[in-house]
Image (cartoon, rainbow, N blue to C red; front, side, top):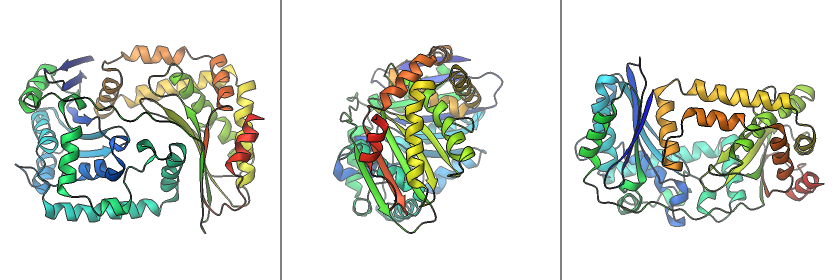
Length: 419
């Protein structure tokens, strides 16, 4: 497999990976513009823009965009996160030029038809309503806000209803002008692709764009905060966040290994102690969410109203215990699980293209896969225990939703954690 990175004269980056033996390819544009790049009055507009890209261009209607890809058996989609917006397609190798043309068209030439804006506004408002009706969706938005209060990175990606109701065509066009310059765009393609051909097409489609300034979002500051909402639900939903490293931090891989040992699977400490031994919940897990300059370890569980206080205490006690007795066998298993997950995931061109865009966006280079594996293998039990010990002193945030009247407050949790 051959990975190649090329930068056009205006700063637009093209990264590809040829995967021998494949008959298909994934190609897309990753834009360095997500929720954390919005001003407060723009909250939700990056996601609104993602929707509108499919609603018509100067050359294609919304139906023609869908038909162009689906007529050749492919699929096209997009997503918005807090740091990027992505538009991508999966097609057979002979249709890569078509996919490039469609993706380039929707990114560069959306028309923002006022009638389509109103239609899509209704769709997004329905999406917001659906999210608010899903406890284990909304609670993570609340946790994010509690951890990063009054900051762009702490706001919901979908945006508040009152903002979405008022976005105009000028608002959408303004966000594109501000953030969709060539230095904020990465074209990533993997599978049955030819790098030189992709670069030539990229030059034709994007080479005329004037150079721009790269996005630099506001620096994120993790803070202690709590949000609790009492509601008559079947389960009490509990989330706890602790400050963790960002992508570029030296402890990034240590944090990932710890999260896997602690709550990453059925063999993890949380799953075994809270679910298997005590039967306090059906679902419990931990994960690390990292950004360019910050991150947080998140613990989630859903339990009964009577058990939520005990579950929180056990979770905190397990965090403290990990600093003393995390075993070599647990760390070895976590490292193996991480490596297997990476390697299995990268068997698809879509996953490859995603990885290429992500690492180029972070480091402006493509680290060889062997480097990632070496970084994981370099994490030892002493480092993992040290990371667990540091968590006891880290900033914490908490969000609770449902019948949570018996739940401890954040002050109790942090006292127990640092005791």
